[in-house]
Length: 204
Length: 204
Image 1 (tube, rainbow over the protein chains, first blue to last red):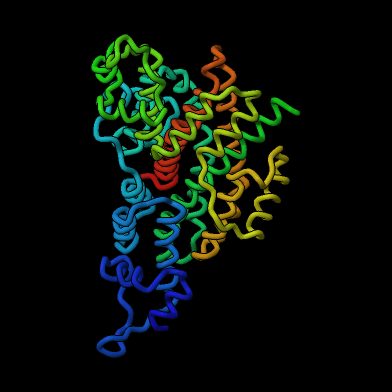
Image 2 (spheres, rainbow over the protein chains, first blue to last red):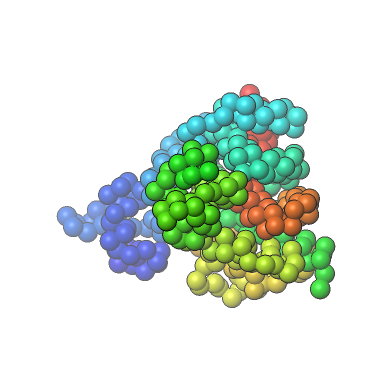
């Protein structure tokens, strides 16, 4: 299909498609004449993936570019891939209090989790601990063990999802989609569950 | 304390404090002369709360202002409060596919949750379903039931947290802090749990 049709099919405006092409976020089409190219179903899907990352995931164009670079590079194993995508999706805080990070390390140990405090999300969690203390809400930290146990269930769903992907070249994509759409889904479900739990505890 | 001391204690620059005062995000200090005011511990805590919402929660100044308006208004019951804060924190999508919303309604019914599809987060979840389908990842929707069950555990922690707040005027604040810091904590813990689960399934 031509770029106008690609725009119609994907819902992305032509100038935006051209921008993505220039930025390498969308592979070039097959050139059929000096100023015309043909695009296929892969382009439609890639454009929808980019829009999902931006519109649903709230990612910046720079982050999308970084994540797509991972999606497009060969991968050795799922474990490495999950780590790479996590790092691209997480913007860890610049300054981390070593005591808070040590506390995150203790939580990880207590849970028996096979991961370490060098993971960028450990720094993000440490920043939450520090912020909670600074505003006099350190009590929130006590709930982290139960949060973590709920997140074990979520992570099992996530890994099942990635494993269920039959096409090898879609494994990476499914990690990205699962992580980004999953964040939005968990956020929405948490709020609905709060409403449900609150309605149950305080009826009427 | 004077504004310079307030700035030092809270880590927020004086011009930013003045901006928050003008915007009504920080209550005025006690005026001691035509161009001087005294601030107290409440101001320090409020400033740290504002910074936590912006720096950790990633909220815009407009969203912070809206949430604070809820925090500062009298509240009838926790259920209503949770709903009001949720609405201030959620930016539901403008266009929602009615079929996807109906699907969210079916999920809510199947879970026996006491909440309805008018909750803004129902629309957010419907948008995730629509996006998943558009990019050929509708398989992700099948995992929502297990996600929801994990979110029930998270919501129970959240309600326990709010109930554990002894000072009445801090109940609203704890809903806000719990929701915002909780989102960051859940996001970080989910990624750490994925790393742990992935390391367990694919050792070495």
